[in-house]
Length: 164
Length: 167
Image (cartoon, rainbow over all chains, first blue to last red; front, side, top):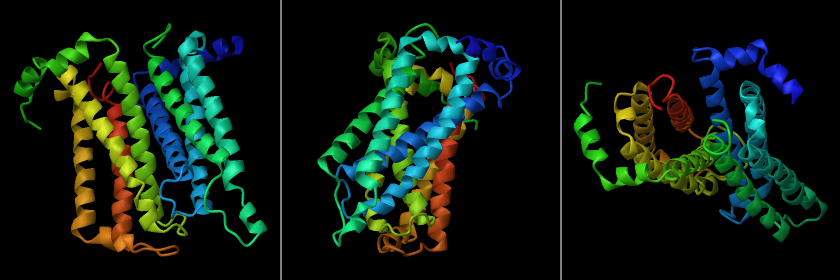
């Protein structure tokens, strides 16, 4: 927390917060929105497929879209960190904590689902696994919930608690 | 654009929809939350098809990828409805907003892009693409245009308060 406060007084944070430039706060905010679209968007597509939607789509190549999920994740981890050091008071906003918890659970669910559904164990035998296990489907469904929760909590951070 | 939208704005502010949006504190944040959910559905599921058409993961049969577009359409519908709520709730902050003008223009262009996709017969061509098949150049241009336009829509939406004068 002390470190965050120190960061929040650093030159880049002050610039991001106080500059009138379109390249400061607004651009970081846009990157955070773009990252959200890519991260959650591709996650929903993978989740829908795991849940059985468009089952003629082979699972293995679909799993390659996880790389876009990670690209979106890192765009948002970086832009989110920058937004946080500009307004560190968010850390004491319970809604923001709920958002972080949803993201943590969303990422863990994603990793678990990747292990459960997309690990290439179909090469073990001649049979190609075409559908996800029940556990895989439960993980996909809960993934949708965590990310919806993260979006809603993120938006409500601007309305509930102490900061915008 | 010299289109005078003031009469529309005046009329909208008198509607019960406008009153509904303004009389309940929860409506605006709820619509914003849904607007972001719709954004994600649209970007991810339309982006999936765009990327496949551009040549990413060609092992995927396009017909099966194409089915995901309906989730994108659902996202668009959510955002159209919630967008109408925003506009009806406070038309004044949109009708003179240059970023909003660009946002609507990009959405319209994205619509034209879809029309071109169907009118040129490319939608049919694409559905026949099986695993490993490469899309024709025109299809790749349409797919890239789609990605650029939707990113542009997001950018202008996010810039409503900054390039424009909302909020």
